Length: 603
Image 1: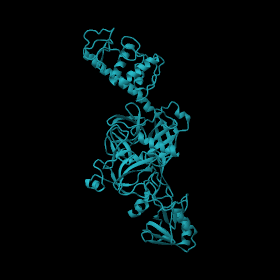
Image 2: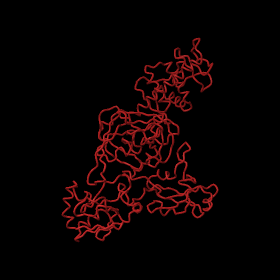
Image 3: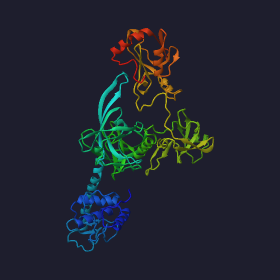
Image 4: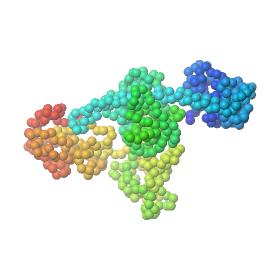
């Protein structure tokens, strides 16, 4: 899985021999060579020796700490990286742990220069070799995964969430713990910590602690992507990085049924924890509606943000969620999604959101529908039914186009594509081919338009802003208080306060910069607003002038010279207040409800 790197041996020729041997040998042959050398050389530190041997076989740098040069001897005592044995190559090496006798397969001859004692049969030798191989593999695996554990850190976050019910107050302070791990960024080799975005959401303070250590260090959030649930942290204190194992961010996806190990700090204890499982499924979905890998290893609260490794100790992804009430279902963010996040961050200096297609389609599974649009017998695709104004594809695609391919990848009639760069047969929604792109990258759409095949190119872009802000990052609440009426801009936290059709009107690009939908959140009862306690909804005008946003409303109220303030709502309701009485009662209402100011600081 990695280029061969030199290990302490006698001469470049022997290293080259072992490299060639490791490349053409299976696991069984490598274990045979290892067992033979352990028996004949009898090293002082067998575990250290095993790790050095298997490091070389796996193409890793040596991990042993000893100073004695490691030479791999065969049973004749000659210096060689491979055991010399007679018999058919690839058959099992039988070893007697008491005499060092070895042979290949049932009835195999002992190696030259060694004579086996009477009564030692092949079956016993085979059994001894099998147990030895298992112990060797277990010891080497433990050695490798010690590094995986040492790269993991525990995250301590203090959160202050907004208070949307009373926007002039901050939310209750809470604390949580999560996991993260130290990495080397592929672009510049800098040291950073990766974790989940939800682990540090609304964080007023983030601290990290290395596995097996007691000292906590303050960490700063460098970039955060809520739609991918990935965040980058940095620790300024150089002491934190001393001796810390750094994980390389590779590429590719784990194979189905392959082993994975999740490392982190879940509930149930204070120290690092590991859980083992297998890859169950690869899909586009989960909490991020993006490419993710389903595993059956336990992903519990506190595991979020921790690394998940494959059986070779390579990073496979970031643990990020499980399913409440379901056993053996957890999800990890795979390496392709991490690379998309990092490319976005490196290009813009911060994460600005994933690219999106933002158009609606209809499957073409009906033979009659395919016939109507003159599709060939072997042609497959989907029907483009609607292209909203905020779609980056607006102008390039047209309604009733048949989308056949994206970047050369055929689109099936059900809207799925074969997942690129995946060795398994996995199909996902075609939207993932857009999600994985970086901003301004060309996306090639192959189309069937009015019976003619053609190709168009679209620049990949994040979705354009809408009047209704996105759910993430969560907006800090703003407010304006007028005569006990509390006005706020429409955000997702207030969706339940207005009719569904008004929400739909907000799901469109703004007509002018800064456009907001202003709603009446509540009425703080006072003499000035008697009779209006049940009024709510979307504010349309103030004193006859259409309200553009919350700041505009504040300006209209502040500069009015009229005796009355007239607030008309889209529902038809009307609120009329005395301007002078509103100003006189303002301080009394603020003092009564512990409101520091008549409007939020940003206004």
